Image (cartoon, rainbow, N blue to C red):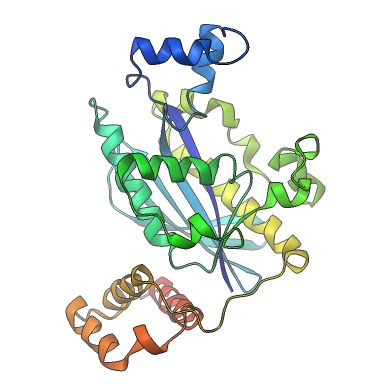
Length: 303
């Protein structure tokens, strides 16, 4: 089974709220809140934030695989790969894809749309998505921001609770008083977390200071920690992929791009071969996931 552990980082939209909406948010609830309280919530409210980084780490049949992080930056938009160590003697190959931000008005909104669309393209190849507090935050925010942008969301994400699995809900039995922070839980399972890199509450401050790579690394390390936590809990959760489920169109398109990039054969030719072989009608989603894994590993081999 191919599982993707994902995590997002957000910042407040400092220019997107008019006075009427601001007053509504301030007076919403049992009491009127202070300006500081309202502003603090901007990066947690899907209607008043931007997603500036999203990271994921794959777990292949129980083993930690490759990782990625898509993030906003003022540097080059060129994709790069690096090896990142997350525990003694263990590392993961990471794809960094920065989305260049010039920080003119409206630019963050446009870049967020590109970033979210790129994440769903990646996520559609997984058999399961794993989050920590994703039902209430990461997944919820991705869903709402996607809707605001009009971006297609994988049907399984919207309908299937087994496809998107929230480890916080699993560990807390859905009871609020039993909810603990990820770094606390990871320490109890002997897993390193990146809180020495950055305090999550400081992400907006660091973003507007221009420390984009720091945020990306923090986001990445959180996804790796989450993947390790899932790895330890996997046998208690169970994994099943319906054997007869056909691959999605996005999954097939991703496979075509991957084969084309790895072999140098044009996308049109690869698409014709896949159509001739009838992979879209005869192969299962699991089969295609395995082929994707093979070509990803080929791509990572040194020339």
